[in-house]
Length: 276
Image 1 (cartoon, rainbow, N blue to C red):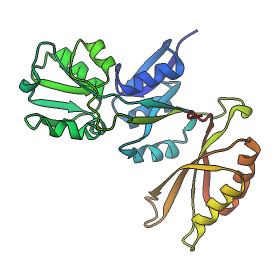
Image 2: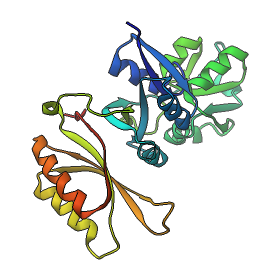
Image 3: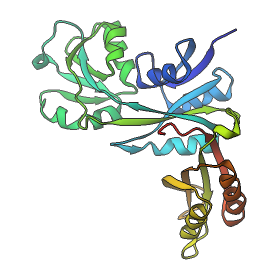
Image 4: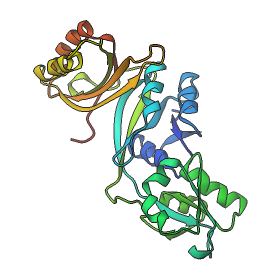
């Protein structure tokens, strides 16, 4: 039996790689993608069976474009995974921190390490496409005086030395990842206790409040709400909402009501709450 092909944003040694192995096990084939758009494309063209996509961080907030990527491409959320994020400054072995000229990493990682980087004013900050890909490039090209911010797994894979461990500003930093598939219905209904939905409301006063009241009346617990502009219609907004529930029939009742009350109501995924 062929291993599952899992699309990730980034390369081996990245946080996406660690989530893929934590969720699916080590017997997988990684499909490395250097952008979230590429990740989606690899799922749509059949190169990958499933995908792992970061969607929000406890410090930096939501990765807003990814909401539309999931919705617009009709992907389905079949699961989620929370990863405690650990950022480390690493470079080729034998170098001193004082001699490092540049640090390269993904913009989100740089943001999460901002306070530490302020203490190293001699280091130029350079945004890059991925944490682990930067570490791999330093290794492959023998780049001296260049450092990466990446997980410790990347240092192990690419023979780098950690010059400063755990440099994230907030030590309890965590990222939520969603598990994607082109079709829904991955787990039995009795195990489903969380869902992600998307809808639009009209401009009448109290429209959103009414929707939220219906969710509450149906015994749904709202855990996340994110508004995004509808590009085709100026000043109109769509709402992406995560909800948890104890009984699936509560969600079924809410769906039937919300389909009538809102515009373009869509279920993006039904899955198991990873935070229980």
